[in-house]
Amino acid sequence: MVSQQIQEKYAELALRTGVNLQKGQALMINSSLEGADFTKIVAKKAYELGAKDVHINWADDELTLLKYQYAPEEVIADYPEWKVKLHDTFAEDGAAVLNIRSTNPDLLKDIDPKKVAKANKAAAQAMTNFRKYTMNDKITWSIISIPTGDWAQKIFPDKSREDAIASLWEAIIKIVRVDQEDPIAAWDAHNETLKTAREILNEKNYKKLIFKAPGTDLELELPDGHIWKGGSAVSEKGITFNPNMPTEEVFSMPHKYGVNGTVASTKPLNYGGSLIDNFSLTFKDGKVVDFKAEQGQDTLKHLLETDEGASRLGEIALVPHESPVSQSGLIFYNTLFDENASCHIALGKAYPTNVKGGSAMNEAELDKAGVNDSLTHVDFMIGSEKLDIDGVKADGSSEPVFRNGTWALDITGK
Ligand code: ZN
Ligand code: ZN
Image (cartoon, rainbow, N blue to C red; front, side, top):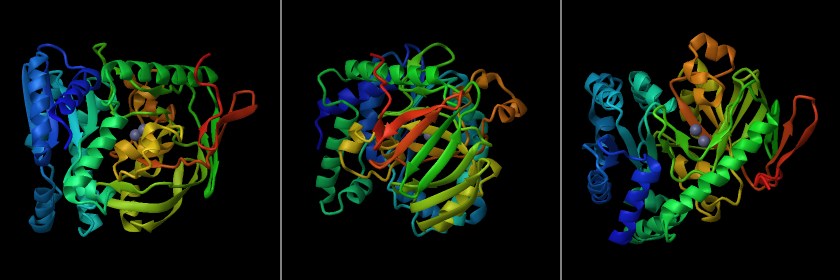
């Protein structure tokens, strides 16, 4: 088990560098019962830092599964109004939101994917207003993870539950830099590196990116006024925060009508408790026109059919193959980690903040600017040591951006 001291360091990092909790601010935490000990450490630290209120929405994998097994379909397909109100109330009050994620990736593997898709869609629909707060950086929010038994044993199947949890703690602590003397300073330096990379890409202002790897030959147009982001973000109120910990990506958005070719996944995707693995998607003018998956074909189908925008892309993220997550050599079956080991793209909604003036655009303006809209946003991994990316400039000339899975472009700014 990881020491109390290390857990306190992690909690402090999540509150200061993650959501950047301010004095007098409320904090809403989404966490699991299995993570109660750590969550209480976070709550205590939050009050010490001046939080006026810490509210925790508890969840539990076993109870979630029981509901899927026993509750009638109309209950599962209904996202209660009071839950929506709860989230909206905290968001309107300007609360910070911390998600402590640690779901068993196989939790819903025996549940009908159609049922799961219905529940996911209902939740996404109900939370449309709340999502605007997070996806437009109106409030500060962050996602972190802590180990739970089932998840840890999925990653370390040959270890006892206890040893698996210990090993996963060890891996996470290292990846989020909490093993370092001063994790907050380490994150400041890391954010600086990502900032330089995104500034260089913004200056390059590529028209197109071309991806080539085994099974992948994809041309991705970047919209006019696209913005590369990465590392820390700044909220509407001017508070700097880190939406994801870990984060190793710089990301922008493809034009919703400008994606052509085929892309192959390089890691399994855990989508709402079901795994989709070894899959490929073929795009024409931005839309998926063909797809196949060795595992989870039905789940992938339901994901793509969530709505019109679910079969178009909303994100392109560049992550060098030698990122700390990748160096761990582990597959986490958890997007927060796996996406930070690998270049990835996302099906569904784009972050309006990835295009100039996007946060203030209405639906028609967003569409015209090439910004995809959907109830869903699902990242999946396409990077490997075999991935090459070329950037095509406005004048038609092109240059290597990635070679063999890592930066070919000098992104140090030196
Ligand atoms: Zn991403
Ligand atoms: Zn994403």
